[in-house]
Image (cartoon, rainbow, N blue to C red; front, side, top):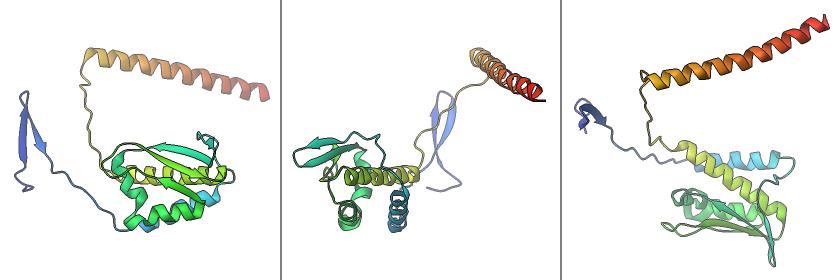
Amino acid sequence: MEVLRPQLIRIDGRIYRKNPIQEQTYQHEEEDEDFCQGFVESAEEPCDGYEVVQTQQGFQCTVKAPSLLYKHIVGKRGDTKKKLEVETKTSISIPKPGQEGEIVISGQHRSGVISARTRIDVLLLTFRRKQPFTHFLAFFLNEVEVQERFLKFQEEVLEKCSMVSSKQNKTKKEEN
């Protein structure tokens, strides 16, 4: 596709430019892994926000993630997954490419399972941020209803802020 002559699409009398889809690959995944390791090691206590279930073999936790991100958790030749398993002393079960399902983390110690879960969450967050935007949202600001609701919102915010500032002014006056 030429930059000066893009493909144009007409919808309801408007003309839109169709941009090519660019898939970006990243060569330096190791840097992200080092970041994750430092992040987990710096945590004072493991987070109890995860649902860790005790089983006969130890502890187990599941992670819901899009199947497109599984490859980033597995890493090249399974290196990232192996490193996670060794460092957290857990077993990580990831569905095959193209299959939907949950990532299952199993281990003998609850802290290891939570640590693996935290590191997987950080990996997922990192790769989600690297993904390009897929949607664009637009709406008309010249609609009467939108303008009325904006004015109502503005009044509510000013009312709440003025209450806060008036309370602060009262406390300052009382202190003096």
